[in-house]
Structures are given as C-alpha cells and as structure tokens.
Image (cartoon, rainbow, N blue to C red):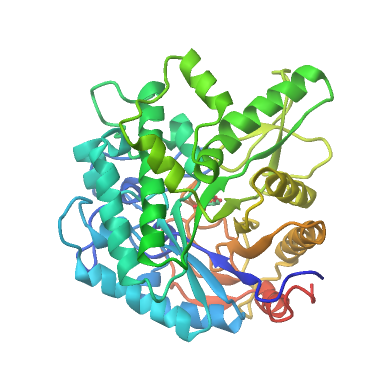
Length: 474
Ligand code: BG6
C-alpha cells in the first residue's frame, strides 16, 4: 500500500444530520429544522413554520449534542486522526445577521474540538453544510442578496479566529456545485421557496446567488489565510463522475458538457479564481451571466483554495437516448451503467470510478486532494448480541480504499479520506434513519423513536485496523 505517512483517515458528518439540540444554547432555526422526514417515494417537505405533531429529524437527530464525549471516544477507538463536522451557522449567529456571536454556541464547538484533539483527531470544519439560518432565508432570500456575503464572512471570521490554533482544515460550502441546480436553491443558497416575488426556479437569480456565494467563499479563503497562514482551506464538490453510455460522439459530447457545466464549473472558479470560458459563454447565451460588482474579479482571484475536496458515492452514464434505463444517485440520477450493480438505494457502486476521478482531478488542478465523503447507505439489522454483520460495507470501503491506493501509486496527491457517516445519522436526501452508513449503529427508527444506544458494527474493528496500519490491512 502506498498511503503516505500522515495520511488523514476518519469520518465525516454534518451538524443538522447528527447534532440535534436544535433549540439548545440559544441556537436559531436553520433550513433543515423545517424539513420533514421522507423516503425514496415521498420527498421531504419544507414547511414554512414548525407544524404541530410533525416529526422533523434534525431537531434531535442522533443527539450528538448530548453524546459527543461518548461518540468521539468511539471515533478515537477506531484510530481516526481526522474528523469532519460542520458548524451550524445558526448556533453562532442565531438569525445569521446579529452583530455579536452567541457565546454558548462557540463554547459548544470549542468543547467538541477540544475533545477531538484530546482523542487524537484534527478537526476538518465545513462552514456551511446545507444548514443556512432561517433568518438569512426569510429576511434576505439567501445569497441572492449581496449583504449576505458579509454576513457569511462575519460568521467565518468569528469561528476561524476563535479556533485558529486548534483547527487547520476548513471547507467553505458543502457540495457547492449543487447551487447551480434548481433543488440546490434552498439548500446551498438559501433562496426562500415561499417567496412570492418569482425567484423560485428563476435561473438568473440562482446564478447570481451562486456568484455571490462564490465571492463569499473567496473572501473567506483570503481572510482565513490572514488569520492563520497555515490554514488549508478547500472547496467541496459533489463529484458526479459520469461516462458516455456509448462511444457515439453525441453521447461523448453530451457527457462532456454535463461534466463541465455541473461537476467542474464551481470547482474551476474556486481553484483558478476565474469563470471558465465554457461557463461564461453558456450563461451569456442564456442572458444569465451574473453581475460582477467592482472588485469581484479580484476577490475570486485572491481567494483560491489550497486543496480540492469532494464527495464520491456512485457514477452515472449520459446519453442522448432518452429511453435508456435510469439510475438513482446522490442528489441526482442519470442513466444506468450495464456493467455496475446498484446499492439498496439504487446508487451504482463504482470503485474504479474513484480512481478515474482522482486521476482526472489531479490532471486538471494539480492540488492536494481529500475524499471527504464516500460510503454505503444500507438498512442494517442489529443482531441479538448488539452488532451488525456489515460485510457489504467492508467490501464497499475496501474496494474504494484500493482505488485510492492505485491512484496514489499513479501520482495522485491524495492527503485524506473521511468516509461519510461513521456513526449512523439522518439521511440528507430522504430524512430516513434506516439508510445507515456508520461503523456505529444507533438505536433509532425513521420516526425518531428509539433509545439512541450506540453499538459497534463488524466494520468498526475493521476500519480501526485499516487506519492503524495506514491502509496496509484491508
Ligand atoms: C452528500 C451530503 O450529498 O451525500 C451529505 O453532503 C449526505 O449531507 C450524503 O448525507 C449522503 O446522502 P444521503 O441522502 O444518503 O444522506
């Protein structure tokens, strides 16, 4: 195995999917607090207000808020040396636009960060993981309002300054490229779905809001480097790796366009500091090129990222043949690949695709990289002696770790791997609990009932050995 010494091994989470304590310590409401549970067949609902007798999974989630010491100890037992988590902006600035931060929120994260460090982990913090404060949504329509740029910068400056000697690795926005899609309008950009002024589904507004968020991200990267020049700050892209379904030139071209317009565009701006020409011409043709205020171009240039990070779960095929078979996927599906099997949730499992992706990204950017999400969601069954025989998860992860190893051997500068959901948590897509990714089983049902007891699955010891041996013992 070729994993470099000091390779970062760990797990990844997001506050709204595992923290709970949604109204504790002065925290304000965030977007996920108004999202109901759902399933593959029943999409989650976003309600304008908290409705009585409705279950909102983020409110208690798996209650890391009250279990963090126990949970971090378990991550330490698996020898994690990195842990990815997000800070909920609304715990620090409850409405998003206060002048002074909420000390209770800062103290909570300081306690968590101290506990991580005590247990041998370096924190990797996402500043915005699909959980914008509702104040930002309702008062400003999210990033469509330029004032939100400075509100985000104020929030980032507050946490980066407070934790500057304890946290080195930062990500600005989770899966920011999703902001270019209609269903990322609320999640990434905070555009209010209940707004009556016609912004919903308005692509021009969406690309302006995405531009404003890119400016905010770049400002934060620049500022972060001033706060601590050692900070490593990354973009985080939902990398939907795709293949042409056939070698037909029309399929190859269509796939290329998808890859550029959806998968590569945002990362290109964050890495290179300019809009790529393919995007400029696409947006201009549709009369949607965003307004650049004076100084924006310079900010984008000055705030380029130090590392490229991405999520990778599955791949899709692209074709001009509308009748080809569909497949599901992370945030979006595509056409099915006849050579791949799909998971229980219909996501096509493709470890070789990860090696391909790493080579592609190394070639494109030549930056240090981290795979900050990867894993298998499965409806695990707890046995009578409180474990889960999750060999399927071990197989999935072993194959993906081998793919990373092969890519490193081919010269890829991969510095870390945080698999998704080391402890079972709420699914972002469906709001379900039964879609479990963890090495640690949490006794909780889809409706939120359950004791929350934590139990180690078979994969727990397996991953502990993988990390301890720096990828040698798979
Ligand atoms: C990514 C998100 O899109 O995929 C995570 O960053 C999410 O928040 C993960 O949980 C897996 O998706 P899901 O729908 O299975 O939770």
